Image (cartoon, rainbow, N blue to C red; front, top):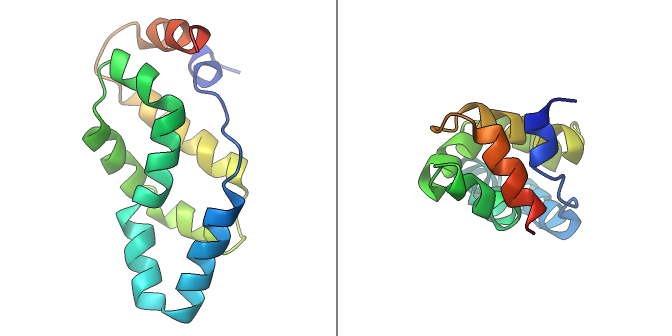
Length: 116
């Protein structure tokens, strides 16, 4: 496991949020897809867990939200039960850390995570 992956902890799966989003997707597919494509429903949860470390490494919430929105297809698969949470969260952790603007970001994230 890389130093980068270790630095962003795996948050617990938001089961109630997944169930709510799946129900919306089934009851009103258009609104459900708008929610998934907007991606805030997951970005906000992950930002609570990872935001301090990402900000310290130079990533703003808007940049993180753009990354999560780019992962909407995988989020939809998680919502409908075709992907596991760990796959989605690990994929987003990898994307976020690879797009950090500062050099040495793995060390910055690791030290930020250690202070939590």
